[in-house]
Length: 242
Image 1 (cartoon, rainbow, N blue to C red):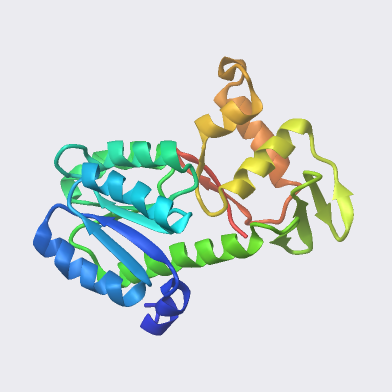
Image 2: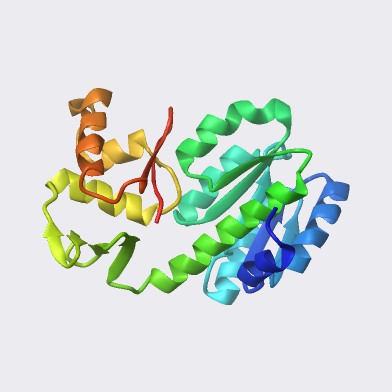
């Protein structure tokens, strides 16, 4: 269990938009979020929430740091909501909360890029861990956003401008496709880059590559980067952790 004060340390400057149509559950969970985050907005349906989402952007000149949404909502469900939000802001961090009988949505949600998937009833310790992980990633991303060189650990670095991999200040030779994959994985740091997303990144015509060919390409890339850095998520894709 992560200590509460550690969660607050990384979440206290962040903003969230929370979608939940169950008013009692919204009130209960919203009070927890109010202790953790600097700014919390609560909405009960997707239509109002999307309006609030854009109002916040126009007022603050930035998007919410985190969006948390239920799946089963009136007017528009959480899956369609996530798609709409990603059309507006592709890099949005989204946490989805679902009832047990809605877990069939998991694959689709992962494919469109959500950050985390939580099951009701919420386990408080798991919720804190997810918020800590998500908030830490956002804070680190902000620090690194304007950095030219990304530290991948173990004396490996990625030069964002030159798009080259360095090890102990020496260039590691990558193929053009390996470079494209690295750029995508770093962009999606700690998030899953789906098979489809990777294939679309490296090929204009996705039909030109098979799953076996992609696995071979990833296997060759693994040999050139730090061990345990590239995680395979069975059935979904890959995630770069650093």
